[in-house]
Image (cartoon, rainbow, N blue to C red; front, side, top):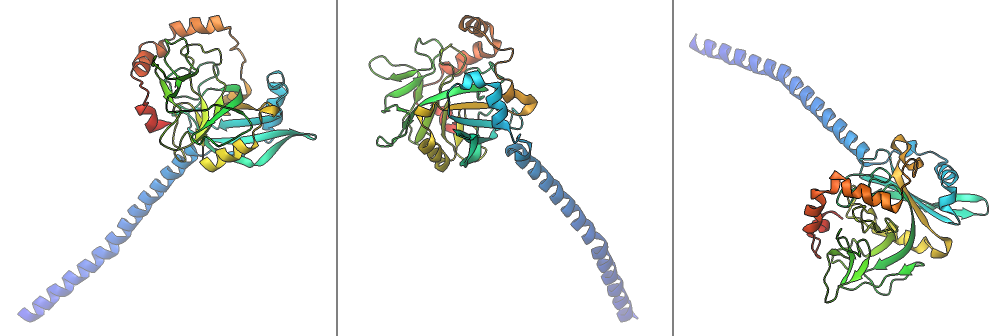
Amino acid sequence: MNIDGKKKKKIILFGLTALAIIIVVPVILALTLKEKNIEDSVAEEDQNNMTISMSKVPDNIIDSLVMLYDTLIGDSKQIIIVFNDKASFISSHLKAFELSDSGWVAVDSLDFPANIGAGGFAQYGKKREGDRKSPTGLYTIRQYFSKFPNYEAKLEKINVTKNTIWVDDLKDSLYNSLYEQGKIRKNGEKLLRQDALYDYVMVIDYNTERIPGLGSAIFLHCWRGPGKPTLGCVAVEKKNILKLMSWIDANKHPIIIMGSLEKGAIFNIGIGETKTVKENKEEIKTDNSIKEETETDEGKKTETKTEENNLE
């Protein structure tokens, strides 16, 4: 009897174990699958936030921009457009166009991802020093520089040395301009870097009036990787900036148009924002966004630009 009793207990225990497996395992698998689906959904949403949705780009974007900004575009025969779906997105897209006998045509090889400032695009006229946003607007491109002295492009060349900086000190009379360090030392961004970000760079002519606080040193340069933010510049993969720089030609008066498709911001450059230099200076004086914060951010900047080395 004892033996039979033990057998019965084993049979019952085995049966209960099997039943538990039959019930519990599917539940665990279902929960795991649900969690995986949630993770995939989040990952997909994150990816959507990082990547421009090309389906939303108007087919006639170049025609619309040329029609809107005909006076500003003037005799330009080369246009670069940098845009995103939502102003706050870092990941954006760059497309280039050239004027031919038949009108504006897309340059097929110049259509690729780009990164902008960590804060996305600033509203037109609202870009400020230290806000980590890229400016919205239409700007000329006339100059370039490179870590490699023998590299040549069809733009005005800036020869850089270990002492070449771009002044970003709000209180300096040379704010937002090139300077070669000498006996008089100034605060600014070194243009000859040890990393690859400034191997090949085009200067975007932003804030050419050099109004303190409106932002400085806005370049188009090599990126650190997909989705990696800048401090306000536009960045693309190195192979792509080389394509751009082999194409761009100062004789064709190239310009760059920057802005978000969100609320049609890129199509509203200058509307309701036209101000004189004096008005802009007055606004800067009373702009709380750069009051103490700017002095703190900029005052701590050194020639090594430690923080920028981690972002730009």
